[in-house]
Image 1 (cartoon, rainbow, N blue to C red):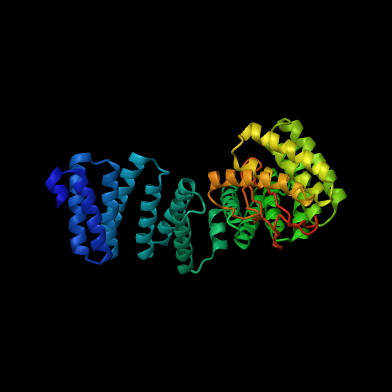
Image 2 (image 1 turned 90 degrees about the vertical axis):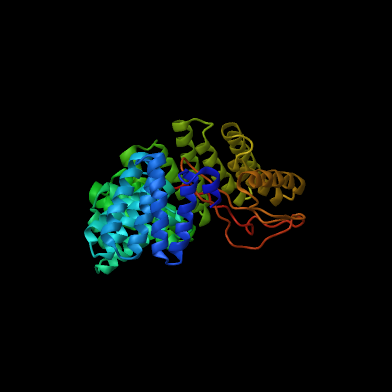
Length: 428
C-alpha cells in the first residue's frame, strides 16, 4: 500500500487504511479477509498508540462485528466488553462511541435470547445516545427500534416497558423529553402518546397537584393547539394554570407562560376580550418576575400585538411590536432570528394597512437575517412573498407555524380576517 511505503508498516495511518479496507470486505461478507485486516489494524494501534487509546477501542468494536456476523457470540461479546472498557475510560461514559458499543453488545445478547441483559443495555444505550446526540438523532431512533423489537420478541409492548422502568419521576422525565422532541418535529400523534404516558406516571409518582404535572399538561395542550383542537387545549391549560398557581404562586413566570398559551386559545377562538385580559396579566407577571427587557416579555408582547392586529387595532399592535423589537435587538443582537420574527409581524401590520413600502423594507431585512442565520428558508419572487416559519422560544424552545390559506402579492390589500396568523408557542 502507498501508506505503508510512505510511513512504514506500523504507522497509525496504515492502521486506519486497513480498517477501511476491512470494512469493505465485511460489507461483501468476506469475513476471513476482513478479520485479518482488522487484526492487523488492532496490532498496530496497540503497539503505537497504547492499549487504552480510543482507536484501539474502535478496533475491538470492529473486530467484534465480524464475529457477531458469523454468530461467534462468545468472541464477539468478549471484544465488545473490551471495546466498552477502553471507550469509557478514554472518552467518558456518555460519549456516542460508548452508546455504539453498548448497542452492538445488546444485539449479541438479544440474538442469544438473553433478553434481560439485552434490555438493560438497550436502555442504557438509548440514554447515552439521547444525551450525546439528542432525542431525534437517527442513532437514537435505531436503538429505540431495537429495544421495541426485543420487547416484541418477548410478547411485550411499550406500555410494559414503561411499567418495567417503574413509575418514577426519572421515567416520566424521559418520556416528557421524547414528547418534546416529537412535538418539535411535528409528530403530534407520537408527542401526544408520550406526554400522556409522562402525565400518568407523574400523577401517580408525584401527585396530581405537582408542578411537573402542570408542565406536562401545558405541553400536551400545545400538541392539541397546533392541531386546532382548541377545546382540548383549553381544558388542559386551565388545569395546568390551577396547578401552577397553587404550587408556585400566582406571580411565578410559569403561570405567566400558561396564561399566554390560554390567551392564545381564546384569541384563536375569537374570544378577544378574555384573551386580552389574560395576555395583560401574563405580561405583568413576566415583567415583574424577569424585568421589562427580558426576551420572555418580548414573547408576550408579540402575542398581544397579534391580538390587536386581529382586531384591527393597528396602532396598538405597532407599538407593542416595536417594544418587542427593541428588546430583542438589545438582548439578542440585531441579526438574531427572533429579531426577524418581530420584523415579519410588524411588516404584517403595515401591509394590512396598505403601507407597502414600510412592509417591504421590514420583510427584506427579516429575510436577510433568516437567510444568514438559518439558510434560505424564505423565497421572494418579485414582490410576492411566502412568510417563513421560524423558531420562537420562551426560555427553552418553541414553534411557530403559518396556518393554511391563500397567498397574496404586496400589490393587493388582504383583509385582517383573511391573513393567516402566527402560532407563537413555548413548551417547557
